[in-house]
Image (cartoon, rainbow, N blue to C red; front, side, top):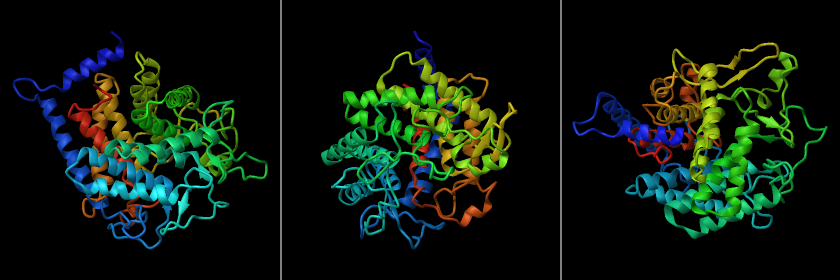
Length: 455
């Protein structure tokens, strides 16, 4: 029996109700499950849907004000449109009695297929006006990241509804990325592509702060996520090969020895680093080089999910690296007093310890942290990091500083650090309900003993 098998059996035993009724610990889990599900249904999903559906032009509104009124400018980006499709598809599977999740997902699917898909060159446009007018492609290129989310949303929509058009389009995108974005020499995918799918190479004329031409962790982890979703509905040999490829690259190359992700890399995966530069230069290139605790805890979950979907047995390596990433984030980027993961840290040259360089706490990192902490608690219940205790602190933080109990939705960042966000937008092209939904739905399932990754 492997270590993982032993842990699964142990976890299963811990969450079973005894014949004498729930123990105090089991009752606590049930209470958290009920509380979090109530928040999921009434504080997250209900304010968003179906209000976010654009009945006139299709797809979803992006600009949502603090009180869930609609803002004026309504650009539509492939990433957020696809995330809405995914969220509604998953919500429909979880709550099939609420039929507007299905119709909302359908509206999003039609907008992707009929408006955002490039019939001439293939791939999805990155950005349109509200009415579907495509933004100048000389200004907004196509990306592997955006097309990955399209696969993600369409695969989930197919799983929820059986719509064959959606699966056919998901397959077509995957093959388009294979032909245009995949790097057959160094593996992985090129992120930035021209309208016709040609990878955009980096040149000396580009600003040093630009990420164009680099490979990156963010598109890589979401390609992993997309292929995981796709493989469950289309167990194709090539999809499996690419899913395994991305898992190995992320855990062995993009994740460094300390246990955090390198953000950007050259084509051959050489890290982009400014550590030996001045602090002024490091600050200037913040976007390209820092420790992102949110991405680290998110990736820990995505790797374990991919390993599970691949059916890998005795995959100690993935579990080891995932745990290391969560531990690094807990030890270096978690607010031990209040809760919440900080936005960024840095290992300056000559220093062994990490310095927090952004102590704000964005919404998506807190959601991913909640999910990852409970997953670690399920897998390693007796670990010295006390993952369940940290999960409790993280949920208390989210409930107090991120969830708007008056208008619904989540603030863009924790009010303990940024109280001004209380009246800022609840939604925009980079902010939907996707991170929050996944985290809350997963935690409810884990607390109820119904999470597929654990059993």
